[in-house]
Amino acid sequence: MNLNGKKVAVLGCGRSGIAAAHLAAAHGAARVCIFDSDPEAVCHDATVELIAGAGEKEAREFAPELVVISPGIEADKPWALAFTCVGAPIIGEVELASRYFNGRIIAITGTNGKTTTTALVEHILTKSGRTAKACGNYGYPFCEVALADAPPEFAVLEVSSFQLETIASFKPDVAVWLNFAPDHMDRYTKVSDYYEAKLRIFENMDEKQIAIVRVGEKLPPIKPQVIEFSAYEGSGLLRYEGTCIKQIDTVVADLAGTALVQSHNAENTMAAILACRAVGLKDSEIVPALADFELPHHRCEQVAEKGGVLWLNDSKSTNLHSTEAAIRSQNRPVILLIGGKDKGLDYEPLLPLMKGRVRLCIVFGQIARPLARVFAPHIETIRVGTVPEAVEAATRRARAGDVVLFSPGTSSFDQFSSYAQRGNCFREAVLSHLSTQPHPQSR
Image (tube, rainbow, N blue to C red):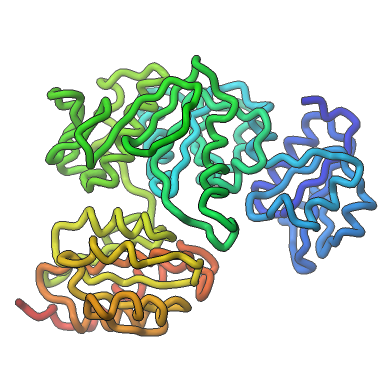
């Protein structure tokens, strides 16, 4: 991609936008400017030009020859389209970086499990002596990795549907499709739009590349070689039985005693094993790395256990499918804390799974009232306003043998700036209550 002498507009002044601006400048762009519609936007890098509070007028006046857009900005809206006034293409930061990164790319997508799988693949590659960086939607911006003085052998790239919307020639060596379930209905008008965006991960791949896919995903025909796995069905090259990942009847790895033993993380592990095999690693290099892997925070993370009650922080659960996976992985009675922003999702499909597993549901946040209407006729339900109030209610009702599962099932933006802030709020509330409360009641 020849940027020599060209004007480049970068939309959004977050870390990925700054990295994209530096990469474009490093490859000869005559002028690179970051634009942000927020008049209070601040760029924490004095070497990068920023126009805050930019409108369509500023976009047309700049008239760039390339537009690099942040994933949180919709490319088909008037503000973004104003930057294309002289016919400039719009690409994302991932697309830009892929044109200048000379290593191998393992790209991971799915509605849930992306971050854990991305972190695990990076961990395995690093422990085996390869150089790798987790990047994209998790870890570093991909442009930072591409711009490094000594780029790694592997970019382990978590890619969201938003990032895949703006690819053009992006072509991973290995693509991992973990799962698909409805999400982001506050951005997409139809589930099919979200699905089509996700499918773009395979768009430029051919028979020389490999796709790692969960059994039962019902993808359309794709060109790369497909290798399947599943923790819930008996087919696929790898399957999960007891605590063991098996290939036919041979044990590949026993996850007992690791952070990955729950079935949804076993699926992430199988995907990671197959991805690492696809780039040449042997099982003898892969399996030992599983023992000391630590899950990223806020993903069914154990916060505490007191009086026989286990408290789990699954704040990363921002959709129905992730909460379903978290509930399915429990083998103890569940007190479910669920709620947050109303994203227009239908929660009734959760009910068959919840019956017999969830003994109490505590709903909170903007969506609390609609959730109570769905759950209360079938499961005892308590409605509260905030996360600390939900923790207080769970503390009063928890019994020895319970697991209190904080798996909100929707985004955090009604009360928090991120799922991480929400998860930290839950953790702090739990530790505070447990330090002052007596042991939970016995059965």
